[in-house]
Amino acid sequence: MYRVKVQILPKDGVFDPQGHTVKGALEKLGFNGVKEVRLGKLIEILIDVEDESQLMIQTKAMCERLLANPIIESYQLLDVEEVP
Image 1 (cartoon, rainbow, N blue to C red):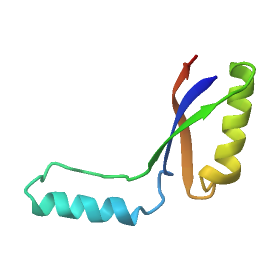
Image 2 (image 1 turned 90 degrees about the horizontal axis):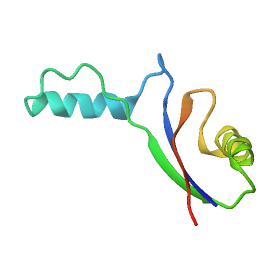
Image 3 (image 1 turned 45 degrees about the vertical axis):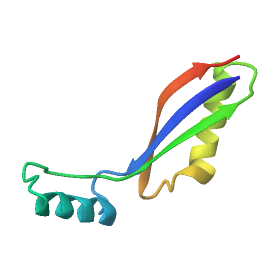
Image 4 (image 1 turned 180 degrees about the vertical axis):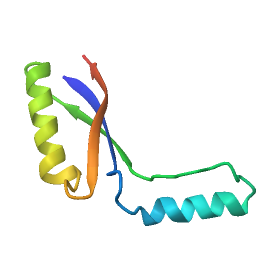
């Protein structure tokens, strides 16, 4: 069994309205050095598969078919941990 963490963010060049709003709020609070904010999702999945190869295949399929919108979002596997 594995625990995998997937980070999903807007693709470079795609307008991120939430990030834009947070950046503006940070500036109003006096954090003027902030150049960019991008908001995304961190998804943790516990999955029972035979090996790490199957884990990668299934996680990629999950991201491409449901978890991320491939037109405007990119995904990255941040951490893979084998658990008992």
